[in-house]
Image (cartoon, rainbow, N blue to C red; front, side, top):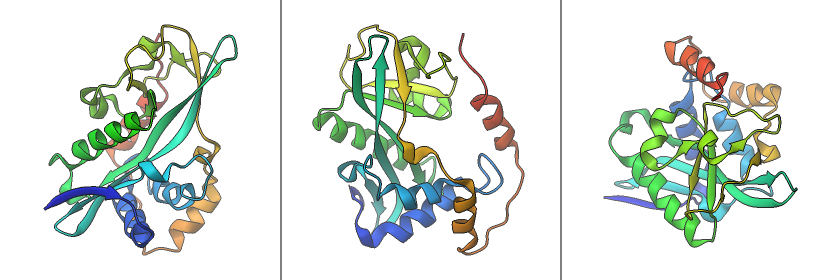
Length: 211
């Protein structure tokens, strides 16, 4: 039996372990995503109503978490939007449709709460099939005016961005203290840090922009 439900306090440690296993060595040797999950829940921008776990036969196998973010246009008008991440599925359950189901479920809940736009950073290959498009196509950029290849936008309400130029600002919780993240990781069961090709792919993608 597969179900999606809100995360409970009793899930916290399990969700952090899932996130660690899903991200370890994926983008860098080790990872910080589990530390982000650990601190995110106490931040004012965290949205507990959009904090979901995927459960298969009574076992939590994945999760998705949302925080508030902002867009500001050239006239200074702001729009409150969403970003999600980390989104994690245990490695042995990946590419079986559970992540897709979790993400799509969260879109419906976010739209029902009145949110109109989601901006994320990730591998486009994982998200364009979920309705995300390049930030350039929606005229959404970073404060300096760049359009990162890894930044993607999804309108939950068609026409919400209306063609204006928008500057994206994520939550301060995303600015992770690397020293604290390492200290947190060191307190957990040891996992081997390794170099692997996905890290170079991530480096190239994360340093690329759309012209």
